[in-house]
Length: 179
Image (tube, rainbow, N blue to C red; front, top):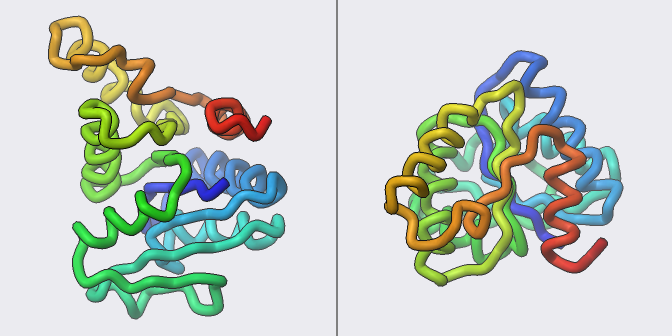
């Protein structure tokens, strides 16, 4: 399975890097490929290192203005002309999506895939890995959207919230029938 991971390129504390490393190891050991933003810095590097060390494949999609930070020596690296093309390529190459901790770029990527799912433009499973409760507020906001009629489909059809890496991968493998 090609698993797209949206996540930060920032250097982050252990409460965020530990679950990222764990998920990366599970992904690599499971024979899955990481599809990610291609950067060799911060949390993106942590995950790519973990997948590679565990024998997984790396598929990077960087963007023109960040190409200097792209990870060298991966099996596949594409340089997109802008962020919109990058996002489209990441989703095109992925069978499923995991959203890890991140800033506005990660949030943009997450809401984009959820909007596509809401409108039936994709059926790819999406998991938000809620490391250290990072997405508790977003989870509450999504529930409010559902409760107040802003979501035309049940929240559970859009996204699965996983508290731990093992639950995230188990959900994806079950959803994709690889388990």
